[in-house]
Length: 111
Length: 118
View 1: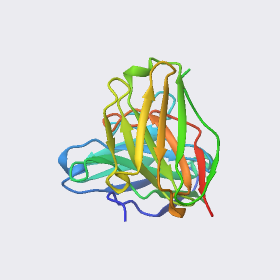
View 2 (view 1 turned 30 degrees about the vertical axis):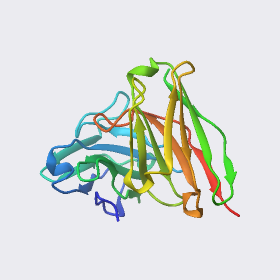
View 3 (view 1 turned 90 degrees about the vertical axis):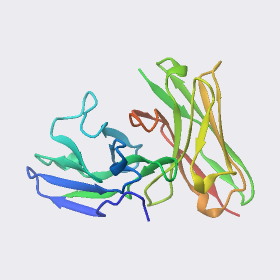
View 4 (view 1 turned 120 degrees about the horizontal axis):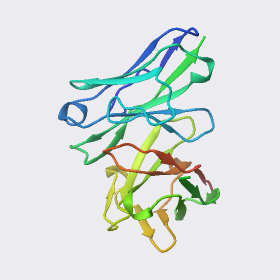
């Protein structure tokens, strides 16, 4: 069981908008630690998608956006494209574990 | 450009040790931490630990305490991760990544597959 909870899968048609939730607790997201998001295409290393809750690294399309509230965070992807089909992971820090924690990952399927 | 290049795949027997290297280039090595993350086949990401490239200070995941050691060689801009007493459930792709928990991991190595099998 991951410390950060994500839905195992989400899906959407091309052009639609999907959101992926990341639910934590008072020792991680709720304690004020920032959330980062990664995209992992099959057979490749993860890629930083969103950092510090809502910031996009250079080169990441503005179709990807992040937010954080309370003990949860969300990744939204608008204007879905076939190339967005991948696994998505959230990441934060947990003070009880004194270490980094990842969500279990969400597989996005573009229908 | 920033690159993290890892050593090649390894096959080890249970009880053995493995040491994976991660050579950094394209930036000042001592200004970013190096973290290690692994991914078992078909599974999610698991944080293993990080090391400060500035002072060598380390922090490890609780589930790996005592079996993992990360080191750095600033003269060659290379980080190392050694995992001891290998078990079959240590079979995974091991990644190094630049950065720490505060800002996320902005560059990743290509991954090193470690297979533990008798």
